[in-house]
Length: 367
Image (tube, rainbow, N blue to C red):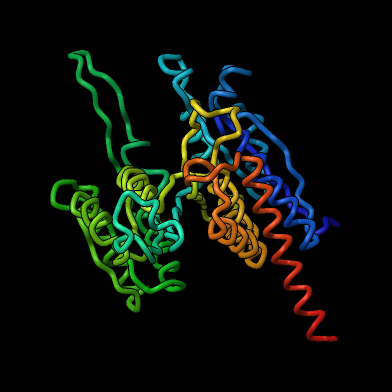
Protein backbone atom coordinates (compact mmCIF):
# COMPACT_ATOMS: atom_id res chain seq x y z
CA UNK A 1 0.00 0.00 0.00
CA UNK A 2 1.33 3.45 -0.92
CA UNK A 3 2.05 5.75 2.01
CA UNK A 4 -0.56 8.54 1.67
CA UNK A 5 2.05 11.04 2.92
CA UNK A 6 4.36 10.35 -0.01
CA UNK A 7 3.98 12.66 -3.01
CA UNK A 8 5.59 12.42 -6.43
CA UNK A 9 6.65 15.89 -7.57
CA UNK A 10 8.14 16.50 -11.00
CA UNK A 11 10.59 19.41 -11.27
CA UNK A 12 11.03 21.15 -14.62
CA UNK A 13 13.91 23.60 -13.96
CA UNK A 14 14.00 24.81 -17.57
CA UNK A 15 16.16 27.74 -18.65
CA UNK A 16 17.97 30.78 -17.29
CA UNK A 17 17.32 31.28 -13.58
CA UNK A 18 14.80 28.43 -13.62
CA UNK A 19 17.18 25.84 -12.12
CA UNK A 20 18.21 28.23 -9.33
CA UNK A 21 14.71 29.19 -8.18
CA UNK A 22 13.46 25.61 -8.57
CA UNK A 23 16.27 24.38 -6.31
CA UNK A 24 15.24 27.00 -3.73
CA UNK A 25 11.59 25.89 -3.84
CA UNK A 26 12.63 22.24 -3.56
CA UNK A 27 14.65 23.00 -0.42
CA UNK A 28 11.63 24.73 1.14
CA UNK A 29 9.37 21.78 0.30
CA UNK A 30 11.88 19.41 1.88
CA UNK A 31 11.81 21.53 5.03
CA UNK A 32 8.01 21.42 5.08
CA UNK A 33 8.10 17.65 4.60
CA UNK A 34 10.36 17.30 7.63
CA UNK A 35 8.04 19.31 9.87
CA UNK A 36 4.76 17.77 8.74
CA UNK A 37 5.88 14.19 8.21
CA UNK A 38 5.42 14.11 4.44
CA UNK A 39 7.75 12.54 1.96
CA UNK A 40 8.25 14.36 -1.32
CA UNK A 41 9.85 12.28 -4.04
CA UNK A 42 11.37 14.61 -6.64
CA UNK A 43 12.40 13.86 -10.21
CA UNK A 44 13.83 16.37 -12.72
CA UNK A 45 12.99 16.46 -16.42
CA UNK A 46 13.76 18.58 -19.48
CA UNK A 47 11.60 21.36 -20.91
CA UNK A 48 12.12 24.46 -23.04
CA UNK A 49 15.54 25.44 -24.27
CA UNK A 50 17.16 22.82 -22.04
CA UNK A 51 15.19 20.18 -23.93
CA UNK A 52 16.16 21.66 -27.29
CA UNK A 53 19.85 21.66 -26.35
CA UNK A 54 19.81 18.13 -24.97
CA UNK A 55 17.54 16.23 -27.38
CA UNK A 56 16.27 18.76 -29.94
CA UNK A 57 12.78 18.86 -28.41
CA UNK A 58 11.30 21.53 -26.07
CA UNK A 59 9.03 18.85 -24.59
CA UNK A 60 10.56 15.37 -24.77
CA UNK A 61 8.05 12.50 -24.50
CA UNK A 62 9.65 11.38 -21.24
CA UNK A 63 8.81 14.74 -19.69
CA UNK A 64 5.16 14.49 -20.67
CA UNK A 65 4.91 10.94 -19.32
CA UNK A 66 6.48 11.95 -16.00
CA UNK A 67 4.20 14.99 -15.60
CA UNK A 68 1.04 13.00 -16.28
CA UNK A 69 2.06 10.41 -13.67
CA UNK A 70 3.00 12.99 -11.01
CA UNK A 71 1.00 14.35 -8.09
CA UNK A 72 2.12 17.88 -9.01
CA UNK A 73 4.60 19.65 -11.29
CA UNK A 74 6.83 22.60 -10.37
CA UNK A 75 8.36 24.57 -13.26
CA UNK A 76 11.14 27.17 -13.19
CA UNK A 77 11.18 29.18 -16.43
CA UNK A 78 11.58 28.68 -20.17
CA UNK A 79 12.99 30.75 -22.99
CA UNK A 80 15.76 33.17 -23.80
CA UNK A 81 17.43 34.89 -26.74
CA UNK A 82 19.77 31.93 -27.20
CA UNK A 83 17.04 30.12 -29.12
CA UNK A 84 15.78 33.06 -31.20
CA UNK A 85 15.61 32.19 -34.87
CA UNK A 86 15.99 28.47 -34.28
CA UNK A 87 13.74 25.77 -35.70
CA UNK A 88 12.08 25.21 -32.28
CA UNK A 89 11.09 27.67 -29.58
CA UNK A 90 11.37 26.88 -25.84
CA UNK A 91 7.86 28.26 -25.28
CA UNK A 92 6.47 25.45 -27.44
CA UNK A 93 7.24 23.11 -24.58
CA UNK A 94 5.22 25.14 -22.07
CA UNK A 95 2.17 25.41 -24.33
CA UNK A 96 2.37 21.72 -25.15
CA UNK A 97 2.64 20.51 -21.56
CA UNK A 98 -0.34 22.65 -20.53
CA UNK A 99 -2.36 21.07 -23.32
CA UNK A 100 -1.16 17.53 -22.57
CA UNK A 101 -2.09 17.91 -18.89
CA UNK A 102 -5.50 19.42 -19.68
CA UNK A 103 -4.78 22.60 -17.73
CA UNK A 104 -7.45 25.16 -18.51
CA UNK A 105 -7.28 27.58 -15.56
CA UNK A 106 -4.28 29.74 -14.76
CA UNK A 107 -4.46 31.40 -11.32
CA UNK A 108 -2.28 34.42 -10.63
CA UNK A 109 -2.79 35.95 -7.19
CA UNK A 110 -1.51 39.38 -6.18
CA UNK A 111 -1.30 40.62 -2.61
CA UNK A 112 0.65 43.80 -2.02
CA UNK A 113 2.52 43.67 1.24
CA UNK A 114 2.34 46.89 3.30
CA UNK A 115 6.10 46.73 3.85
CA UNK A 116 6.74 46.59 0.10
CA UNK A 117 4.08 49.00 -1.16
CA UNK A 118 6.72 51.72 -1.42
CA UNK A 119 8.58 49.56 -3.97
CA UNK A 120 5.68 49.77 -6.41
CA UNK A 121 5.98 52.12 -9.39
CA UNK A 122 2.57 53.47 -8.33
CA UNK A 123 1.81 55.57 -5.27
CA UNK A 124 1.69 53.64 -2.02
CA UNK A 125 -1.89 54.70 -1.32
CA UNK A 126 -3.03 53.17 -4.61
CA UNK A 127 -1.47 49.72 -4.20
CA UNK A 128 -1.43 49.15 -0.44
CA UNK A 129 -3.98 46.47 0.45
CA UNK A 130 -4.44 45.12 -3.08
CA UNK A 131 -5.66 41.50 -2.92
CA UNK A 132 -6.86 40.05 -6.21
CA UNK A 133 -6.52 36.95 -8.34
CA UNK A 134 -6.62 36.59 -12.12
CA UNK A 135 -8.35 33.55 -13.62
CA UNK A 136 -6.97 33.19 -17.11
CA UNK A 137 -8.40 30.61 -19.53
CA UNK A 138 -5.39 28.64 -20.68
CA UNK A 139 -6.14 26.30 -23.57
CA UNK A 140 -8.29 28.27 -26.01
CA UNK A 141 -8.25 31.55 -27.84
CA UNK A 142 -5.76 32.95 -30.30
CA UNK A 143 -2.76 31.13 -28.84
CA UNK A 144 -4.23 27.78 -29.82
CA UNK A 145 -6.20 28.78 -32.93
CA UNK A 146 -5.24 28.08 -36.52
CA UNK A 147 -2.33 30.27 -37.62
CA UNK A 148 -0.11 30.68 -40.63
CA UNK A 149 1.13 32.70 -43.61
CA UNK A 150 -0.60 33.13 -46.95
CA UNK A 151 0.93 33.22 -50.40
CA UNK A 152 0.41 36.98 -50.56
CA UNK A 153 2.68 37.47 -47.56
CA UNK A 154 -0.10 38.15 -45.02
CA UNK A 155 -0.44 36.24 -41.76
CA UNK A 156 -3.39 35.12 -39.64
CA UNK A 157 -4.12 33.93 -36.10
CA UNK A 158 -7.60 32.59 -35.43
CA UNK A 159 -9.25 33.20 -32.04
CA UNK A 160 -11.83 30.54 -31.24
CA UNK A 161 -13.72 29.55 -28.09
CA UNK A 162 -16.31 26.88 -27.37
CA UNK A 163 -19.15 27.23 -24.87
CA UNK A 164 -17.67 24.43 -22.79
CA UNK A 165 -14.26 26.11 -22.52
CA UNK A 166 -15.87 29.30 -21.24
CA UNK A 167 -18.20 27.49 -18.84
CA UNK A 168 -15.48 25.61 -17.01
CA UNK A 169 -13.23 28.62 -16.42
CA UNK A 170 -16.24 30.71 -15.38
CA UNK A 171 -17.27 28.14 -12.80
CA UNK A 172 -13.72 28.00 -11.43
CA UNK A 173 -13.63 31.78 -11.05
CA UNK A 174 -17.06 32.00 -9.41
CA UNK A 175 -16.23 29.19 -6.95
CA UNK A 176 -13.11 31.01 -5.86
CA UNK A 177 -15.04 34.27 -5.47
CA UNK A 178 -17.34 32.51 -3.00
CA UNK A 179 -14.29 31.83 -0.83
CA UNK A 180 -13.02 35.41 -1.13
CA UNK A 181 -14.97 38.69 -1.24
CA UNK A 182 -17.69 37.50 -3.60
CA UNK A 183 -16.86 39.70 -6.60
CA UNK A 184 -16.02 38.73 -10.18
CA UNK A 185 -15.02 41.09 -12.98
CA UNK A 186 -15.23 39.38 -16.37
CA UNK A 187 -12.98 40.97 -18.98
CA UNK A 188 -13.60 40.78 -22.73
CA UNK A 189 -13.74 42.86 -25.91
CA UNK A 190 -17.43 42.30 -26.62
CA UNK A 191 -17.80 45.57 -28.51
CA UNK A 192 -15.57 44.21 -31.29
CA UNK A 193 -14.94 40.45 -31.09
CA UNK A 194 -17.49 37.69 -31.61
CA UNK A 195 -15.63 35.33 -29.27
CA UNK A 196 -15.91 38.01 -26.59
CA UNK A 197 -19.63 38.33 -27.17
CA UNK A 198 -19.94 34.56 -26.67
CA UNK A 199 -17.72 34.88 -23.58
CA UNK A 200 -19.98 37.52 -22.05
CA UNK A 201 -23.15 35.55 -22.84
CA UNK A 202 -21.85 32.33 -21.28
CA UNK A 203 -20.39 34.01 -18.18
CA UNK A 204 -23.66 35.89 -17.64
CA UNK A 205 -25.68 32.67 -17.92
CA UNK A 206 -23.44 30.67 -15.57
CA UNK A 207 -23.66 33.50 -13.06
CA UNK A 208 -27.46 33.69 -13.20
CA UNK A 209 -28.03 29.93 -13.09
CA UNK A 210 -25.36 28.80 -10.63
CA UNK A 211 -23.77 31.71 -8.73
CA UNK A 212 -26.33 34.49 -8.29
CA UNK A 213 -24.91 35.32 -4.84
CA UNK A 214 -21.67 36.50 -6.45
CA UNK A 215 -21.45 40.09 -7.71
CA UNK A 216 -20.62 40.08 -11.44
CA UNK A 217 -19.41 43.00 -13.51
CA UNK A 218 -18.20 43.08 -17.10
CA UNK A 219 -15.31 45.21 -18.37
CA UNK A 220 -13.69 45.79 -21.73
CA UNK A 221 -10.04 44.81 -21.73
CA UNK A 222 -8.72 48.24 -22.76
CA UNK A 223 -10.56 50.05 -19.97
CA UNK A 224 -9.63 47.29 -17.54
CA UNK A 225 -5.95 47.85 -18.27
CA UNK A 226 -6.46 51.47 -17.20
CA UNK A 227 -8.54 50.71 -14.10
CA UNK A 228 -6.00 48.18 -12.78
CA UNK A 229 -3.52 51.04 -12.57
CA UNK A 230 -5.95 53.64 -11.24
CA UNK A 231 -7.87 51.58 -8.65
CA UNK A 232 -6.53 48.02 -8.24
CA UNK A 233 -8.04 47.66 -4.76
CA UNK A 234 -11.52 47.55 -6.33
CA UNK A 235 -10.97 44.06 -7.76
CA UNK A 236 -11.30 40.60 -6.29
CA UNK A 237 -11.51 37.85 -8.97
CA UNK A 238 -10.69 38.84 -12.55
CA UNK A 239 -11.97 36.34 -15.12
CA UNK A 240 -10.75 36.49 -18.68
CA UNK A 241 -9.63 34.66 -21.81
CA UNK A 242 -6.15 33.50 -22.69
CA UNK A 243 -4.43 36.45 -24.36
CA UNK A 244 -6.17 39.16 -22.30
CA UNK A 245 -5.29 37.27 -19.11
CA UNK A 246 -1.68 36.94 -20.19
CA UNK A 247 -1.37 40.68 -20.76
CA UNK A 248 -3.32 41.88 -17.71
CA UNK A 249 -1.59 39.54 -15.28
CA UNK A 250 1.80 40.73 -16.49
CA UNK A 251 0.63 44.32 -16.04
CA UNK A 252 -0.41 43.82 -12.42
CA UNK A 253 2.70 41.79 -11.62
CA UNK A 254 4.71 44.99 -11.15
CA UNK A 255 2.26 46.51 -8.65
CA UNK A 256 3.80 44.65 -5.71
CA UNK A 257 7.30 45.95 -6.34
CA UNK A 258 8.88 43.00 -8.13
CA UNK A 259 7.77 40.40 -10.65
CA UNK A 260 9.99 37.99 -8.73
CA UNK A 261 7.43 37.75 -5.93
CA UNK A 262 4.49 36.33 -7.82
CA UNK A 263 3.45 32.69 -8.12
CA UNK A 264 0.95 30.96 -10.38
CA UNK A 265 -0.99 27.72 -10.63
CA UNK A 266 -2.36 26.03 -13.75
CA UNK A 267 -5.15 23.57 -12.98
CA UNK A 268 -7.42 21.17 -14.86
CA UNK A 269 -10.45 19.06 -14.09
CA UNK A 270 -8.38 16.49 -12.21
CA UNK A 271 -4.90 15.09 -12.26
CA UNK A 272 -1.74 17.03 -11.51
CA UNK A 273 -1.44 20.80 -11.66
CA UNK A 274 1.49 22.86 -12.92
CA UNK A 275 2.96 25.54 -10.65
CA UNK A 276 5.46 28.21 -11.65
CA UNK A 277 6.63 31.74 -10.84
CA UNK A 278 5.38 34.21 -13.40
CA UNK A 279 8.79 35.77 -14.02
CA UNK A 280 10.78 34.82 -17.09
CA UNK A 281 14.12 33.08 -17.43
CA UNK A 282 16.18 36.28 -16.89
CA UNK A 283 19.24 34.97 -18.76
CA UNK A 284 21.22 38.12 -17.93
CA UNK A 285 21.44 37.12 -14.25
CA UNK A 286 21.32 33.34 -14.64
CA UNK A 287 24.02 31.52 -12.71
CA UNK A 288 24.94 34.52 -10.56
CA UNK A 289 22.82 33.75 -7.47
CA UNK A 290 20.82 36.95 -8.00
CA UNK A 291 17.29 35.77 -8.80
CA UNK A 292 14.49 36.31 -6.30
CA UNK A 293 13.24 32.82 -5.33
CA UNK A 294 10.06 34.07 -3.62
CA UNK A 295 7.84 33.56 -6.69
CA UNK A 296 8.99 29.95 -7.04
CA UNK A 297 8.67 29.32 -3.30
CA UNK A 298 5.15 30.78 -3.21
CA UNK A 299 4.36 28.64 -6.27
CA UNK A 300 5.41 25.67 -4.13
CA UNK A 301 2.91 26.88 -1.54
CA UNK A 302 0.21 26.92 -4.23
CA UNK A 303 1.33 23.41 -5.19
CA UNK A 304 0.71 22.28 -1.63
CA UNK A 305 -2.67 23.98 -1.36
CA UNK A 306 -4.19 23.49 -4.81
CA UNK A 307 -2.24 20.44 -5.96
CA UNK A 308 -2.03 18.31 -2.82
CA UNK A 309 -4.72 19.77 -0.55
CA UNK A 310 -2.20 20.66 2.19
CA UNK A 311 -3.49 24.03 3.40
CA UNK A 312 -1.60 24.26 6.69
CA UNK A 313 1.67 23.48 4.98
CA UNK A 314 1.02 26.11 2.33
CA UNK A 315 0.17 28.67 5.00
CA UNK A 316 3.46 27.96 6.76
CA UNK A 317 5.40 28.88 3.62
CA UNK A 318 3.32 32.00 2.99
CA UNK A 319 3.76 33.16 6.60
CA UNK A 320 7.50 32.58 6.40
CA UNK A 321 7.85 34.55 3.15
CA UNK A 322 5.82 37.40 4.65
CA UNK A 323 7.98 37.41 7.77
CA UNK A 324 11.21 37.50 5.79
CA UNK A 325 10.00 40.31 3.57
CA UNK A 326 8.80 42.28 6.60
CA UNK A 327 12.26 41.89 8.15
CA UNK A 328 13.84 43.34 5.02
CA UNK A 329 15.74 40.16 4.15
CA UNK A 330 15.42 40.52 0.38
CA UNK A 331 17.21 40.09 -2.90
CA UNK A 332 18.55 42.96 -5.00
CA UNK A 333 15.30 43.49 -6.92
CA UNK A 334 13.74 44.61 -3.64
CA UNK A 335 16.71 46.64 -2.47
CA UNK A 336 18.34 43.90 -0.40
CA UNK A 337 21.67 42.13 -0.59
CA UNK A 338 20.70 38.45 -0.32
CA UNK A 339 21.35 36.04 -3.14
CA UNK A 340 18.96 33.32 -4.31
CA UNK A 341 20.31 30.73 -1.90
CA UNK A 342 20.50 33.21 0.96
CA UNK A 343 16.88 34.26 0.49
CA UNK A 344 15.77 30.63 0.42
CA UNK A 345 17.75 29.92 3.59
CA UNK A 346 16.10 32.91 5.30
CA UNK A 347 12.65 31.55 4.42
CA UNK A 348 13.59 28.08 5.68
CA UNK A 349 14.85 29.62 8.93
CA UNK A 350 11.55 31.50 9.24
CA UNK A 351 9.58 28.27 8.78
CA UNK A 352 11.63 26.67 11.56
CA UNK A 353 11.09 29.68 13.81
CA UNK A 354 7.34 29.65 13.22
CA UNK A 355 7.13 25.95 14.06
CA UNK A 356 9.37 26.33 17.08
CA UNK A 357 7.16 29.14 18.40
CA UNK A 358 4.02 27.10 17.80
CA UNK A 359 5.48 24.07 19.57
CA UNK A 360 6.65 26.26 22.47
CA UNK A 361 3.14 27.72 22.88
CA UNK A 362 1.66 24.20 23.03
CA UNK A 363 4.29 23.15 25.58
CA UNK A 364 3.54 26.21 27.73
CA UNK A 365 -0.20 25.52 27.52
CA UNK A 366 0.13 21.92 28.70
CA UNK A 367 2.85 22.75 31.20
